[in-house]
Image 1 (tube, rainbow, N blue to C red):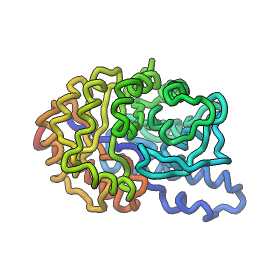
Image 2 (cartoon, rainbow, N blue to C red):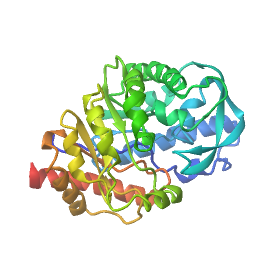
Image 3 (tube, one colour):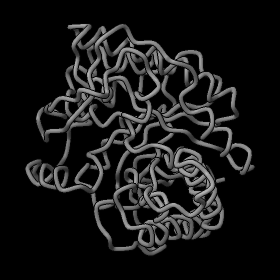
Length: 340
């Protein structure tokens, strides 16, 4: 199939999950109700993705409050009780983060329930997202390792363990989210890609890395205003990524200042091209999606393009996210008719 579709990862929480204090089954404990709400939200978004024609579906990260911390919550050696303020993405913004205080070790499975629920309720290809090692260490404070690289590879080991289990659960594509890759370019080439490859080592399923300029939140949109008319950061890392064992690269293309000719530096990769803008509430048309695909086609072969969203849509209103998913599916169908 030309131009199969997927989403970058996260989706908005439905109202009943975004409002955890709403109890509709008083005979159940709050924990039981929250688990059921997460399951229901996952099934809702799976059904909507199928209805909108999304070919590679996700569980929408409905069981995670944060794309990084959702993984960290099941790891021994991390102190969530005493968070500290830390600058993230080279001090682009401040956040309260947990601390690494002891050797890192998985307590058990991290995302088994989410993956198995999703796999049970869809016959389509299933994608699952995990935070990448560099982005994790940029989102947590270190009070134990004293070495960023050593800590990154410690997390890579744990990511690999969970990723292999996810593949055994029936996940078809595991995507590592590495927004830190456009901040620490020298480190990406020095050790970041090696840590990412360690996280993906030996996986029997397809692998991807998602690199982006972030959600459509104010801290990110303000920062992007300082980057000028062309965002060429990827020029420094695409050649090394292309030589890596990671099979796919997810990159934003819609309303982006990333020069699309940079995609020529990824001849050996499938490109998940972002055709939906997640930093704007304006809903794309199918024709808008086709225009972006046509622009990407100048630098990437048809067979190597997967249509996706620029980034996750967790901060968006649910109705807007639904409309954008519908546009993604309709746009891909139109592109197959016009360009196939």
